[in-house]
Image (cartoon, rainbow, N blue to C red; front, side, top):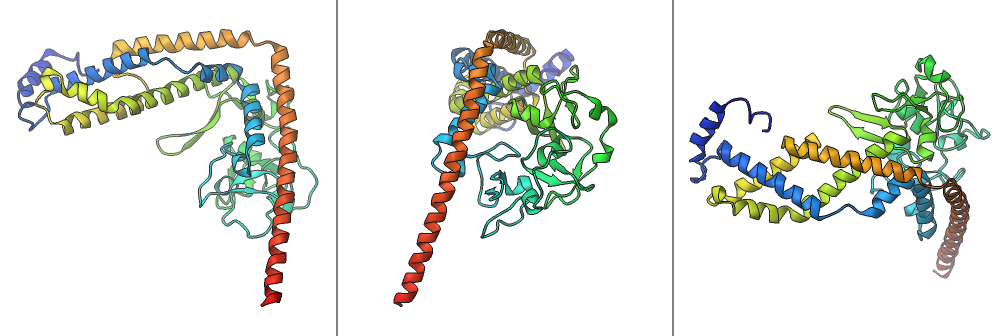
Length: 383
């Protein structure tokens, strides 16, 4: 729309000739279309100015890994059941009937069925692939971390599911069970020689920041543990497993927060924006269904482009995002090291408490099963 506005006056004259058909409801002229798009953009810009961002969410982006880790541990502690514990692979605690979160009775890891390759949930106890092998604690071949959601490799070693997903050269031979992990020998030699800038070790293989101008190397699990932006993104044809360094993770979170904030504003004010557009003088006789259709097109096009459709607003939005990123970086530099250490210690303490609560939950569950079994036996004897 915006690119076609300045290509020649002959298009404007033709649109003016077609604009007369708008009032009849038979067709929508280009001029009326531009009026609606212009109204939606300017109206939404005013909504953004009158509804500031949530400062609590911005502060969580400043503190980053310490705050997110501590808050997640606190959620596990406050949760009455194990439903609040997130998956070790996708870090999401939600589940569906066909994609439950399964807990290993050996090492106590929590994984989704689809994330770990569990076709059917067993009725009795469940053991992960590593616990089934009866081997001692194993280290991932691609990172220095021991334990976790591991899968066997084709050469007899072990690899985290997360590391296998985010390493470009590795893949699963059988995606239904997500094992074994193949392609370890195809990992580029330079990845094995990189030093992770987060843990300072050369063990395993590193990936690099997705930002084209950044080459910082890090282990996938190190990035996940420190709260960096390690998320799958839906591409045009396939899912892209992207990861960013600490600095560009903040940039991605700002963009993600901006997108969620705008979606919330659009959802709350959609009917009002359509009604205001319908009240405009050039569109007074335009059917409401056409106005709603243009509004839907504008929302989808704006979401696809990730920016406004008017060029003058694109510059304003980009300036606001740059100023927000700079202010967040300044605030992050002011976070004292002792506060970060305190949050890190709090995270470890809460993690220990969570494990104790989880063990107590497991004990009480077994007590309940024993009581139910005794009741069934008693009923059988009475009958």
